[in-house]
Structure formats: structure tokens, C-alpha cells
Image (cartoon, rainbow, N blue to C red; front, side):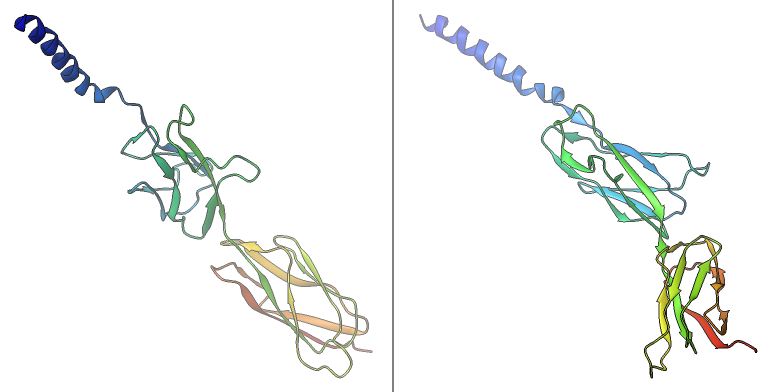
Length: 213
């Protein structure tokens, strides 16, 4: 009678031991994805205590694939962010699409994140002095965009500030000229041409004088 109780106990112990070795069949997930539009170096992605540096593609315009080294287990929450974006660029998930950068591992069969990077744009503008008539229109002939500038109120002699609605991306040339002169005046532009740096431009100077009779 005693031995018949020992055999089932040994069998249960064996089953429990085998079950304890079954951790290797847990679902694991690789956090991976692609980045479009990377032009400059400096990007670093991070999630769940991991970081990876992202270099621009060897062929400009190609997608860059990434994969974090450690796998996540089922149920792990992740959020992939740019710890630092590429130099002079801003990145995010494509507009109008599902944001796949954060989720729970296992909710979908695969973790595949899509990012898009764009070169950072900066505003260009300045001020107009001597304007006494309406009709002045400035144009950025290099990248497009115009701005109309109205004369200041009577008695106002301070420069009239302006900013183009269309910004210019880093590294792109701009060239501001007078598209339409104000009635009875001639305006000239200083500091109107340059290559966009990593800052807004506010030193474009437009000077207006009476047109020669």
C-alpha cells in the first residue's frame, strides 16, 4: 500500500520538473522597423532600456532598417522614440497613419515600426523701412512664396516687420527680391540671399525710397 502511493508522487514530481524547463517556448518579439528620409547623421533610437545609433543610408533616399538587440516577451509594453533626431531633421510616424511606435508586444503578430524624417524648415523674414505706399510684394524666388506688405499707419516711422509663410529647409538656398514695387517708390533688398542655416532668418532688410521722377 505504501509503494502504490510513492509511485504517483514520483510521477507528479517528474511532470513538475519537466514543466519547469518549459520557459524556452515563451513568445519573444524583435522591435524593428524602417526610417524614410534620413539625410544627416546623429539619430539615436531608444526603447525598453536599449539604444541604437542610426546612420544615413549609403544611397540617398533609401529606407534605413533598424532592429533592437534584445527581444521583448509577450505583454511587454514598448515605446520607440528618437532620443536624438538626425542633425537638422525632425522625425515621426507618417501623418494620417496608425502610430506603431508604441504598443504591447504580442498584440500584433509582428513589431514593425515606420518612421519618416524631414529636413527642418526655418522661417525667413526681416523688416521694411521707408515704406509710404501700398503694393509692395516680396518673392523668394529660390524656393517659392511671396509676402505682401502694407504701408504703416500715418505717422508710424518704425520698420515694418515681415515673415514669409513658406519656410525654407536647412541647407537650401533662398533669394528674396522685390516682385512688385509700391506705388511711386523703389525698394531694394539687402541680406536677401543665402543658404539656410539652423536658425530662423530675420535680418533681410528692405529699404524703400521715392521713385525718380
